[in-house]
Image 1 (cartoon, rainbow, N blue to C red):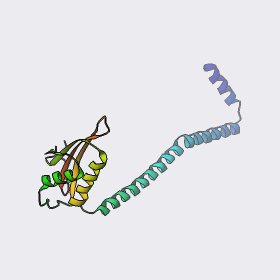
Image 2 (image 1 turned 90 degrees about the horizontal axis):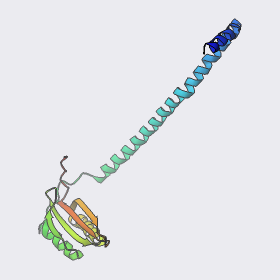
Image 3 (image 1 turned 30 degrees about the vertical axis):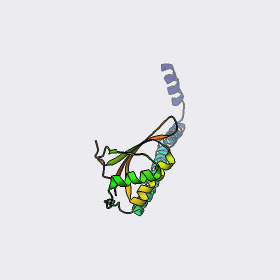
Image 4 (image 1 turned 45 degrees about the horizontal axis):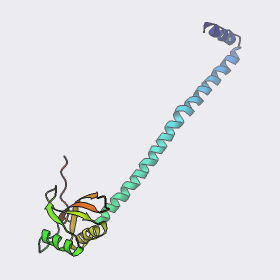
Length: 167
C-alpha cells in the first residue's frame, strides 16, 4: 500500500501546476456527477412518485366521499312491521320455501339460522326483506356444506344496524 501511495505521490509531483488543477477540477466534476446520479436523481424520482401517489389518493378519496354522499343519510330506524319482526321473517321465509329458526344474534338483534339452503332462494329472500320491508342485514355468516348447500346465520334490524362496539 505504501508503495502505491509513494508511486502516486511521485506521479502527482511530476505534474505541472496546471495539470494538477485540471485533475482536481476533473475529480470534483466526477464526484459531483456521481452524487447527482447516485443520490439526487433517485431522491427526486421518489419525491415525484410520492406526489403522484398523493394526487391519486386524493382523487380516490374525493370519489369515495362523493359516492358516500350520493347514498344519502342512513335511516336511523324504519318503523317496525305492523305484524312484528319475527312473524314477518317467518312468513316471508315460508313463502320463499325456507325453513328458519329464529335466534338472538351476537349483537343482540333478531337473528335466524338456516341449514342446508341453496344460495339462490336465500339471497332472493334476503334481498326481498331489504327492499320490500326495509330490514337491514346487520350480520351474515355463511358456511358451505359438502353438498353445495349453505348453513347461514343472519342478524336483522329494522332500519339501520346498530354500531358494533370495538373490542
